[in-house]
Length: 362
Image 1 (cartoon, rainbow, N blue to C red):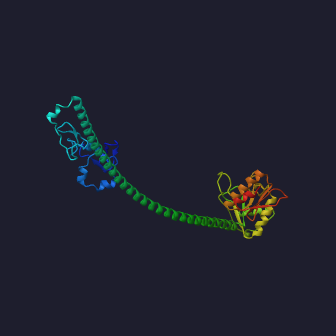
Image 2 (tube, one colour):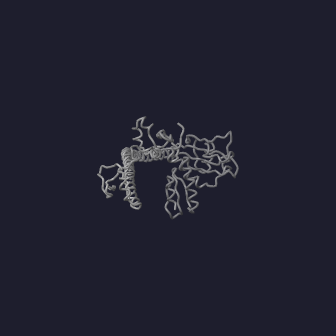
Image 3 (tube, rainbow, N blue to C red):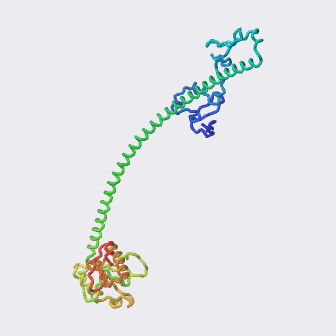
């Protein structure tokens, strides 16, 4: 249904709860018509079609014969001798004066009597009109009070329903809060468990590389034999090994390819850990080793022999080197795939096994 305007407040009526005046045919919303929703729904179809607005009600002619006022007991009458006489209380008939008496009345006296009668009649009419107005207003006030009472009952019911809904919502919120706390505790437990598993996995990966060495700086050759290269380097640093003491030796892809020209490192796994420890100890004494010393490349190709760390430990080692450089620490090294730092010869070594341990470097 298209929206229309209320004749009372001039606002658009968006719903179907409105009523039309039987007299002026104008439409009013329930608030301007002084009708509660409950009362409006209880009205019959005939009552709705016969409903009139306040303005049309005020224009409606009054019923009953009120044109002839009832004479009150205070009216004066003139008897046959020209004396004033009070009529009976139920007298409402105008008593005409005897013509013989009129001759004895002066004009001034007649005016005075007429004035008194008119004043009395006016007072009676005023009292009746006032009484009728007060009665109508009391009826209107009573009607409004009934409507207000119905509205208060309706609002009270709505309030109780809302209160029940809020209590139910509050209970649901508490359940959700408890469930959320349980999920948080479970998440913290799972997070701790995942961290423990990650740490254990990293330790196992590093343990599997404990007998490996990583050789960087060896130029690549398509016809090279990586096992022979490892033997040449170990022989040059004073720890000669037999081919049977090496399980495998091959090149691996670096953690990040910074340059396509840079040679890939060689990883060799030794059968015995003590041989690996000998090679690492000898490599620390030959820090200026280059490829030309072993007859492989030029003098500018420096060779580095390191322990084979996991990706995570290499990142951790890089972070430690940066921190050590900032704080002017003198020593940083790895032993058995573990990272150690030392400020100077007199200070104790600090073991670094995780990112949180970097805070120890102070």
